[in-house]
Length: 81
Image 1 (cartoon, rainbow, N blue to C red):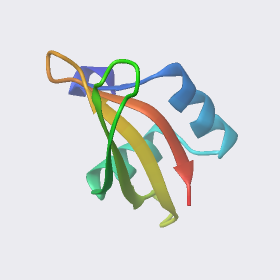
Image 2: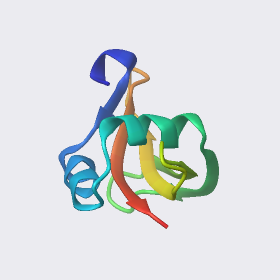
Image 3: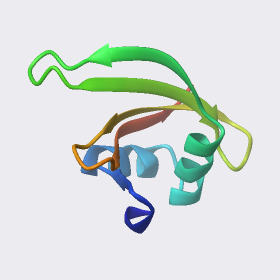
Image 4: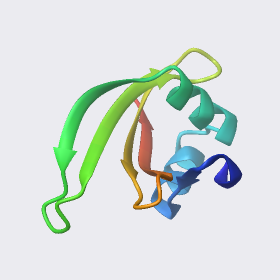
């Protein structure tokens, strides 16, 4: 997914594994998502977004994402809801 400008951070990869989700699930979550909350990081003051979408199997999930300085989308974490 890195070539498409989406970079899952290590914690997101671990959470995908914990919830038995695959990269294709993350892709589907992002493609079907809408923003449900806007946040600001307390230390860096970067904007973060909580987005909700569905996995390939139709389960509801959320991801916390932020944009990098060059436009890449970093996935901080992902979890089922």
